[in-house]
Image (cartoon, rainbow, N blue to C red; front, side, top):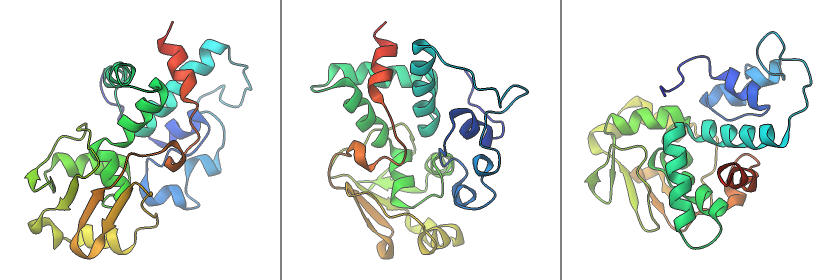
Amino acid sequence: MARYTGPVCRICRREGLKLYLKGDRCYSDKCGIGRRNYAPGQHGQNNKKLTNHGIQLREKQKVRKYYGVLEGQFHEYFNMAEKMSGKAGDNLLKLLELRFDNVIYRLGFASSRPEARQLVVHGHFTVNGKKADIPSMVLSAGDVIEIKEKSQSSAKFKELIENHKKTAPQWLQVDPDNFTGRVIAEPAKEDIEIPIEEHLIVEWYSK
């Protein structure tokens, strides 16, 4: 399955809430869901009642699109979560939050997750002093992320750090003056920007 490359505002409208896929645009009056708060398409304004199956599917799709993960990858994360101690739903959210591209976004080193993914692939960061260019890599508490020295002078990163509108969650520590960040704890569900009912995802995969 190929990655979606169409208008991302349609994704937010389909799920009925902001998924923060367009960076600064999501915080402005130009936000697509703010202007047209209904699903895209000819029948988007029809209020169709979903079945339990449909509700579970929409929750899975919402979370998958929020983190920018393909279907196969998402299923792999769920399988990993099931094998870990604790609740599968909580483990799934932790794994997704600890993805390298998500951590870059949450630190404020990118304006959106898609941009974070692109910056990671282009090799602008190190983890614990070593080159890291795999967006799906899952980080752990204690890992230190740094913008490479040759990238620190770019206007892009200086602007991102100076104009960053978000505050890093409690499980992350950011030092903008030194272009570094650190994972100091495991993420909690309360730190996620959107409401997620992870039990619906567990029910979907448990059929």
